[in-house]
Amino acid sequence: MPGPPIHILLDDPDLLAVNKPPGLLTVPGRQGGVSIREVIPASLGIPDRLLLVHRLDRHTSGVLLLARNRPAQQRLAEQCLQRRVEKQYLAIVRGCPTRADGRIETLLGPHPRVTGRMMVKQRKGKASVTLWEVLERYPGAALLRCRPLTGRQHQIRVHLAHIGLPLLVDPLYGGSEAFFLSSFKTGYRPGGLEPERPLLARLSLHAESIAFDHPRDGRRILLTAEPPKDFRATLNQLRKLAGKTGSASPNQG
Image 1 (tube, helix red, strand yellow):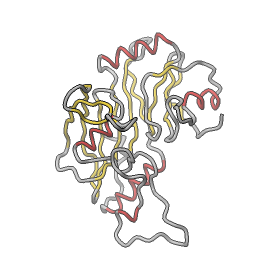
Image 2 (cartoon, helix red, strand yellow; image 1 turned 180 degrees about the vertical axis):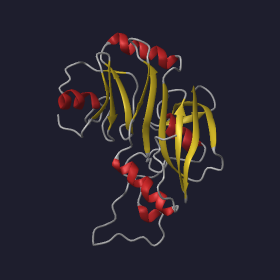
Image 3 (cartoon, rainbow, N blue to C red; image 1 turned 30 degrees about the vertical axis):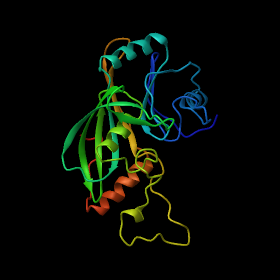
Image 4 (cartoon, rainbow, N blue to C red; image 1 turned 45 degrees about the horizontal axis):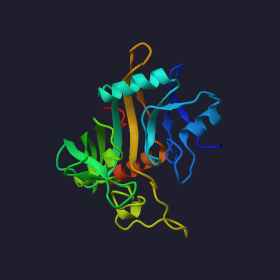
């Protein structure tokens, strides 16, 4: 089955890790769509039945770790429960944080009326914790690094919206389908006769890294994934608006 190019981060007898492109499902959905587990074997000639270790939203890019066998999957699941698996995400948010970092701790649960939507609850929810820090500030936006200590559905998206810093692009929790330069740059008009194209037309969230103990020999493994072109282009334009040049890569930090 054809699909976007897949960049391999780790490939051994127990594990496969990739930099998942945006737009691919982690698992097949009810409404259809191509999943990463379908694309990887077809594009790379990998016959194994790949097992989930964790999930990424369809429109989130970045590090996705899969197990090749049940024992590896079970050992990694145990590490997740023990909080030995450490994940970091890059999030471009709308708004200007007044602090340099913070901790969000809430109960999360399904929305009672909107299928597929999560929300902060006062009771009868699951405990969830996200740490965040500011990497860069722009006019009306910021780049954050987020570290979820728990793995609830849509956790980072809901938590950031809860503190008034929704993702720059998030139709479900931020009210924005895409990011257009004209929405931030006063007086900007696209050239030619074509309508303005969005710089980013998917979630402004990227799974930057994951660290874990290898299930076979216990070695500590750190995997990082470069953000895709649309994410980098958005950052470059925001940096220009802020008068920033030569900014360090988000992976440096």
